[in-house]
Length: 328
Image (tube, rainbow, N blue to C red):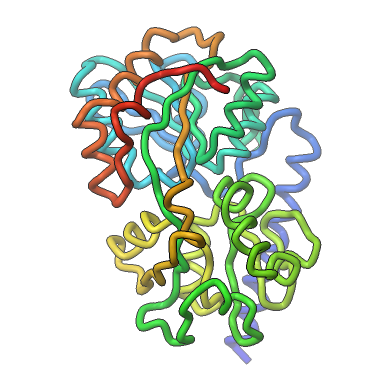
């Protein structure tokens, strides 16, 4: 009875949080950051200190000499990446937001964020996504004209340590005894550009989505669409709410490094899409800190930057990809 009470209480708290989040969404003209994302909002000061959460948001636009809004699945590498950049450019405070690229794009289009009931207007100097398609939208809006590819990744299925359900590939996503935690198809680039395509090819997209395009939602008794998958999916698998989910291989490595009892089921190239996945980045055309943005893009082509990402399992881009060129 006590366990049931706590489960009910937890569900009630989650429902209240979702309702509150939807209320903020309805009231704010800016893009809404989901609750409890302090670790994705950082201000790296010149003295080595790091400010997080609402305080970082409040100080970022006025104090940072460079503001980065980057696809969230690289959040675990960014301390090393930013510190390597600051070592080359001492005295540069760096603001960083690491969230799903579709959500970042929405914030650019709307001119800022709402977090915890407060509005934070402003734009980044540099934006990065897991697909060039998002940057093409900025080009169409005359907000970005050049880009580079700065690293690669591949999809895997994350499972509990020991793979108790015996999951071998994408086909197992459709099993009646397998519960999935999937990136949402609204703002998470891994699903928008890659995962959905693979699920459709296997005839599983409709079974997973049940025709729903949403985030933080239970689409079927067996599937949950996340808000921020690289944080939610390891948690859901480790606490027994889900059995598997599509993630980047780097996210499995990071979860393991944090002691989470998960592992990766590797996929064949036609399902991992490792030959297609490319991270695209560019500077906003009207950035007030354009020179700092260009210095950061040049930094990404250095061995220090590529090593910082490579340490976490990302695949380095080749020198030709790292050169800035027009967005097609």
